[in-house]
Amino acid sequence: MPHSRIAVSGSTGLIGAALVRSLRADGHEVVRLVRHPARDGDEVEWDPKRGHVDVAGLVGCDAVVHLAGAGVGDHRWTEAYKKEIRDSRVLGTAAIADAVASLDTPPAVLLSGSAIGFYGDTGDRPVDEEAPPGDGFLPSVCVEWEEATAAAEEAGVRTVHARTGLVVAREGGAWGRLFPLFRAGLGGRMGDGRQYWSFIALHDHIAALRHILDTPELSGAVNLTAPTPVTNAEVTAAMGRVLRRPTLFTAPAPALRLALGEFAGDVLGSQRVLPARLLGSGFSFAFPSVDAAIRAALR
Image (cartoon, rainbow, N blue to C red; front, side, top):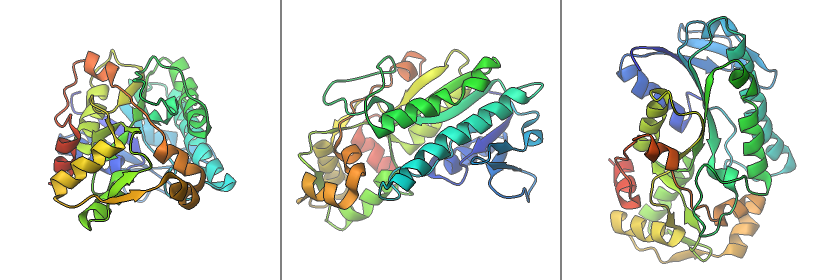
């Protein structure tokens, strides 16, 4: 994509902040959607709960990247927080899609976040983008989340749902909470360790988002996961190898369910997800193995 004007929501999050840095480093103009009155020239005010976007700030944008949403693992899943998870995604995405569709000259692409939670627990069965949604809370949220882009799609905007796996990074996300434990020698497998974790290095995630923006033939669901999903036991062994720490501890499934409540089902669930559409479009992973992804996160 030549030097472009690109709007990004969720720009203070792990992925959003890294994407903004990457785009600006290559000379793109980035405007950030913020939930307060715009104070700087690169800010556009929006309120996802009220469905409000300052549409004037999106004029001239070649692409919109929507990454905002309440953290799935940030709090115990009370009914109130489950509503926050759902509303922050569905209402926010609908607001962005409506704003994009209302423009006289809409952007060429809306790249909207989603998650491999769409597939639910797949056990040891590999799935790609052709697989149907699973059962449970997260799959239902992901279905509604993706459907909320309908206005943009109906307006003829190329729309992509980036179904993200577990991002390997020190700065945040699930892996950001694992690194300190393993560094202290307190890491270990969770439950029986046989559940698959579909991961992706942060560097590869940002490169994949950039690839999607630059690849007109990609639309619909795209899995952002490395091509070699591994089990939790294999993750534990890799963390021990790379960090040179013992991995003797185990978090039994009953203890995780007691500590995490309903969210434990996501931690203990197995998702063996393959990035078929990324690979088919010619994308190459810089860090395809879990060892390489961990080492990249520690640089």
